[in-house]
Length: 597
Image 1: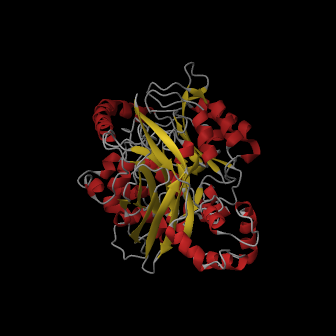
Image 2: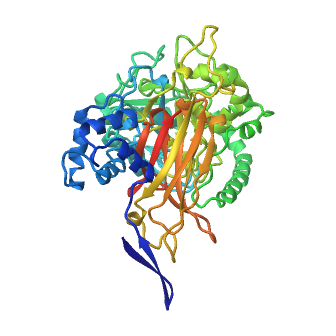
């Protein structure tokens, strides 16, 4: 034990004791139960792994390997003492997720059977109106495991080449060829599974032909091109390993649609200004980012009286029913493996399932929320074979995001997010795609894929019984002393940490709770237990945040993570925490226990 000094004024200093991390009382009790003569032998450790950690297949050989790795913490090499046992539990060798075992979902099903890690306006470095366009955020997204990259392609200033930019804004362009080359170089660093490039096309047929040449030349044999224009079923991620896929609407000249959009711009701009001011004001309530929007019905109910069909024309991509068509570039059309578009006739027609053809449909978050009030089951049925992409509303000029659960609970595969920002909604996205080894593809739960005997599908609005209850024990935390300056949280004393823990999931499962704050301690020990009844555990994420209580100002951020409950390992686990931007801290972690009761 050492001491830490804080200067309060020129003549007065406060000293605080710095304790070493010590095993919580429950850990000591468990060690006593599974040890003999203060030593946990391989056979006793194996029994602990099976009975407490619920690792039914754990062997004595695995237990011996753990003992060998932590042998340097104690002199007697026949087993673990309390200190080395505690070190093992609080180490990276004891992770909370099955994902540490790599890809383990069935990857041989059609693409429509998976949630896919999807970016929105992937080329933007910051806000949606004036930030630079670059290949750097594309590279960063691919390195994180994102599998769907969106590019808005426009003629350059001289109309003889192609730029990527957010149209009709002040964003500075980047050349398409640079983005394509960066995608090729980094596409499979984090995952071997296919990368989809969604193109928002604003080009003439001549420039479309040039894009076709660029794409074909850049990607060569790794570009997947379908044998026919329409397919009855999407291929599987396994069959498309290390392939690039193009998804867009069949090429058309979109002049009429562009004129219609221009006519709507003044009204949309007015609404955009009002919404952005509201979001900024509410955002100031939280030092670490706004709370994830609720799906308990209050948000969705706001849209009850609105006409969904009218809204379907307000799309990022121009409507497939545009009257004015122009010469198409056949070589460009042949590249399209996932066809996108909206048929005539409003929402009912959009969600019709064609047994002979699959396609991709795009809806904004608002369009989906409105559609879900009256067509929830139809959306689920559509997504069993077809792909639904959801994208942020146009007023999110600060590159913020929405609650992804609105998409996932309706089976939407491509819930498109602004990856360049940070905040609680994006933390949920990071959490979902920690599943399945972080490969960017997570198999959808069976209930979203199956049809009942009466052709019934999952009803997202149905009230369901509790399937299981997750019991969470928050023991303690460590690492802030090493990863933060000693005056980062408080100028005059050690920090007062507390933990927020809860569930993001279907509305009935969603809740947040918190521990008490532990005063003046870099090694807080809470020993608090929480229980979370779950009706749809397959879609639930465990949210964990640590904050430092500040009486006079806003509480400081101390780390966060989100974990998919479907892959959560029972038992006592070490939980690494991440920064607001989703970067893993070197030392900060929590010791927690998870039990399904």
